[in-house]
Image 1: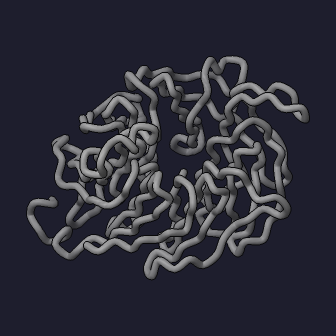
Image 2 (image 1 turned 135 degrees about the horizontal axis):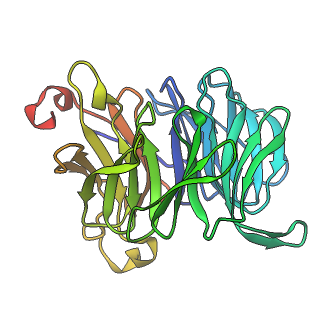
Length: 337
């Protein structure tokens, strides 16, 4: 398995996002660049840059299912909307340090984004608290703001199944589920003993995997919000994702991909070997490690499966994006079942 090495960012990666068809993916990083890459050839097609000043850091990016619009969450508190071709449509002054953004999941009616921001004090806007918000895209309008009952800052927030809920994760190790209509708190789960770093869903959003700095990833059933599985790794985890082939008709791949490594600030004191920067492939049901993929020279910050499950992309603290296409024997060999 030969990875493609893309040196398209100067600073640590923050998110990798595939479009719905899987023929493109977007990467964003703390250098303010947002890149569009073709999956098959790994060429960079273009970049999304806001008009005027270059964005400081971009923490999240998302694209609609029909690949029409792209939204980015910038650290300067601006939500920037683009066409897929790269033209800027509008800028929404959100305030705070924007940490995440995601389009709603209703095909053909993706007119809302959910966001979360850290509190920030500025001269222009004054004091902005930790918030989780829902915004309408066109015409721009604030639909929901959850701030008074937020004791801590949300790391990420995503839409639940059928856009009925918002699922948010926190540095205290909790998951909170909110109603996306009223903003009331529906469920609070003490999920991990340390900061939760990411959450990812299966295609139908009824399975969720969370990763944490406490060296574990956990699989959750979203109908009852109960924990089904736990994957105990030997390193702090920054991201986890469920293989899209976990429920495929022929030859399902019940696999989760985990990535992480020693915290960025401790990395200089160790060699790449002991820093544990490989990507880990775990069996979703048996909770066993299947294999590892070496590569990065720093912790893995984000990862994403190809939409067809035939490979994966990782983005590291080292600013590199590595694109792995699985060999034939991933699909034929018994040990990968």
